[in-house]
Length: 100
Image (cartoon, rainbow, N blue to C red; front, side, top):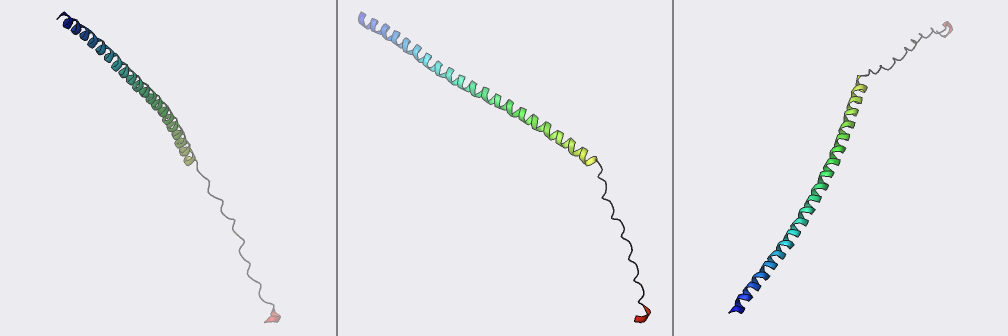
């Protein structure tokens, strides 16, 4: 029965090796997945920063345009000149006496 005990210890050792190998494979997959997620999160954060900077720039431009519009509205526009009065029509001269 000694051979049976040796077989069990050999199987136990093989089981330990398989367990260790499985743990390594799974942990590598998890690490890769975490690294991928970390990279995606980093890229998303960088994109958010870019978009926030663009939004800030557009808000600043909009503020400048509003201020410029207020200044334009505050400047009085002179009224157009009034047309010069046309000379009043002269009454027509009376008809000559010989026509009457």
